[in-house]
Length: 253
Length: 167
Image 1 (cartoon, rainbow over the protein chains, first blue to last red):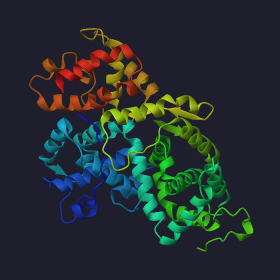
Image 2: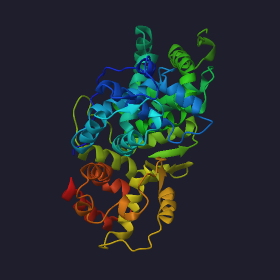
Image 3: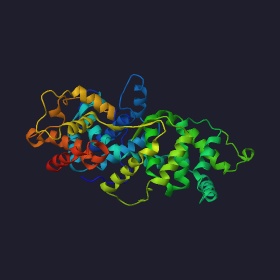
Image 4: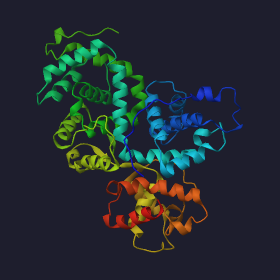
C-alpha cells in the first residue's frame, strides 16, 4: 500500500438527523454506501476529538454527531476524504462493512465500526495529522478571510513585512495587542492562520502539526469562539501593523 | 506527535521560528507525493525534537491499543519463534501507555499476545480471511513508517518480513 496525499473533494453527505428520520432505532438497516460513509465520517470525528467518551463530554459528542457547529464538519469532511481514498485491504474491509446491516441504536458504539475507524483511519494520523492541520487551516481561512477587503488588507501587511526576518514577531505582537478576548490556544491559531494567509510559502510541517493538535483537543472551545477569532483577525488587519494604538480601529460587534 | 502541551503564544511563535530555520517547507502544492515523501516529512519534524527542549511538551503518539501492543510485543519477542506462556498483557499495556497515547477503548478479542500479534500469521489466520485482513491493516502504518513507531531498531527487519509476506 502507498500512502498518497489526500486530494480533497466534496462528497455527498447525509446528516445523521436525516438518516434517522422515519426509521426505527432497533430496526436492522442496510444503509446505502454514501449513508454509511456519512456515518463513518461522523464516527471518525467522534473518535478523533473524543477518544474517551465520559459523562462530562457526552453532550459535546452529541453536538458533533448532530453537526451543531460548522467547525466540527471540517473534521467530518477530512474523515470522509480519508474513507474515500482507502485502497488495498482497508478498502476491502470497508466494502465488507458496507455490505452488512446495522441498527441505529448505539451505532456510534458499534464495535465493528469503531474498530474499523480506529484501525484503518485514526491510526494513520501520526503520519497524517499535518494534513489535517493543513486542511483545517485552509477551511478556517475560507471562513475568516471571506471578503475582498480582508484579502486586500492582508496583502498590504504582507508587503510591509516582506523580506523581514522578524515578520512572525511582528504578527505575534499584533495578535497580543488584539482587544478581542481570545484564549491562548486561539491566539496560537490566529498566529498560524495569519502566517498561512500572508506567507504561505513559509509554512512548515510544524505549523500544521501544531494546529492539528490544538484543534484535536479544543474543538468545543474553538467552535464557540470562531466569531471572536474572526473579529480579532479583522482587528489585526485593520491595524495594518501601525504601532500607534490610537490609530487602530476597533471593529464593533 | 505532540499531544499534550500548555504553551502560550510567545512560546508557540518561538517554536515556529525555530522550525522555520530547520525544517523543510511544504512546497508540493498541487502535486501528488508518495509514502516516502510523507515519511521523510515526518522524520524531518521528529528529528528536530530537540527544538522542543525547554518547552512543556510531551511527545506521545496516538495509537490504538492493539497497534501499540503489536509494537511492544514485536520489540520484546521479535527473535523468538513462539511467545512464552507467561506473557502478561497487563504489563505490556502499562508499557504501551508509557510510550503511546492509547486511544481505543475496545479490547474485544485481543487479550493474548498470540491474538494481538500472532506468530506465523498465515497459519494462525488460515481460515479467517477477514481477520487476516484486519491484521494487515493494523500493521500497515507500522510497516510503512517503522522509524516513527519502533524504538528497538533490531526488531524492525523481521517485522517488515512479516508484512511483506502477508500484505
